[in-house]
Amino acid sequence: MLSKLLKNLRLFIIIALFAMSFAACAKVGRDFPIEMVSSIEIGKTTQTEILNTFGPPWRKGLENGRVTWTYGVYRYTVSGAQTTDLFIKFNNEGIVESYNFSSN
Image (cartoon, rainbow, N blue to C red; front, side):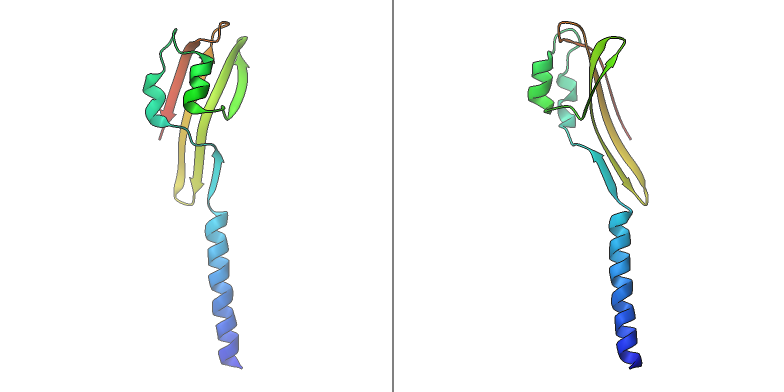
């Protein structure tokens, strides 16, 4: 009887630890080709070229009336966060006006 109880307790602990390891990890956003960021040219690269290179943005918005696209992936674990962002602002003609890339 005690042996069966200990066996069930061990199984419960294993399942609980497994579940906690998944609960402690989260990913938000979508991966994008980081190695292609250097191909962006201010005043030259178009929205279509960005779309073809990076795919659809994770978020779209406006900043001072200018269209913005954000690419990003944010991974959270018990040991910390790993973040990668690419923020692109386009002029009224759909050409890259500025961009910001950051990663930790």
